[in-house]
Length: 328
Image (cartoon, rainbow, N blue to C red; front, side, top):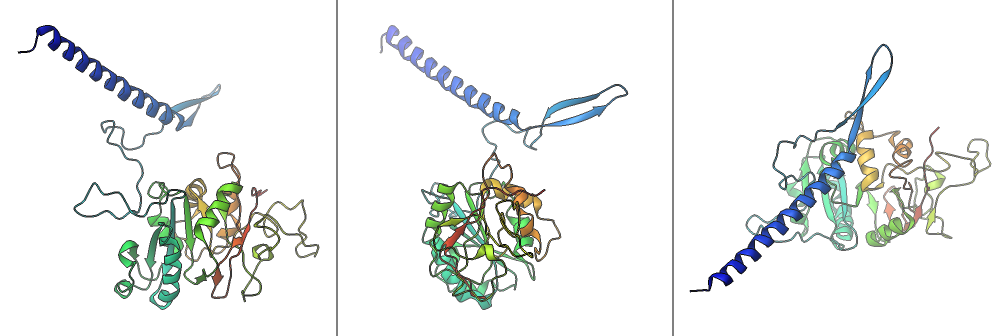
């Protein structure tokens, strides 16, 4: 039998550990409350004499749940059915990225090449099947590693609005929302994201190689071989009149809708910009700058210095970067 004094000592140590754990939990809760306190909004009450602004904490829908079990975000990592303790295998130590595309079986060969580029970097691939054919992709060795979503005759913007909610994809630092007909022979996703991070870019697009691209609509998207990032073009023609004074498209602050890349903060804004009934997205690219003006005082940009080709034959080999969009 242990001496009473020793038992009391062990009991005191146990109590001290419990108190320490409680203090740590309280500190964590206070930290959460402080962060939640920043997410407030104002309501204005108008009286006959003055306008009063009342600040209230925004309700999240989980206010009645016990602390510690609330998970406000999700991801697209596939989880094994029985090994719940296994870590997701599609994580990248440097960047977390998601490639999302609306695809049809006729473009399977090209999508196969694109998917390999991203899966080789342990990025997540999500395919939106607009032609209803999912089984036709089963023979690809990476098919089970991708997330497949089916809806007949819908565009990538329809899918993105419904399946890429910012809270669902918040784990990803970057969202590639691309068309299915892009060539990636000279494209390196990791190097591309390294450029985005080093330049502090929010919304970007790989540039187009004029020697390989047959359908270039805007000069700002053409690769500049002298630099890895470009932010504007200069054109003295009356129809363009692009100079240092230009504040918006087509001279600066513009990316094409076929291959945009969004940072996490930019995507949260862009998702709200996408109308629920948007189909082809024509004109949306002219408004993306609204989501780059004041994203936590960060910058907005395009990227043009990493290789890609489109079949309207576009080769992304540069990084167009517009430090910030200004729409007046």
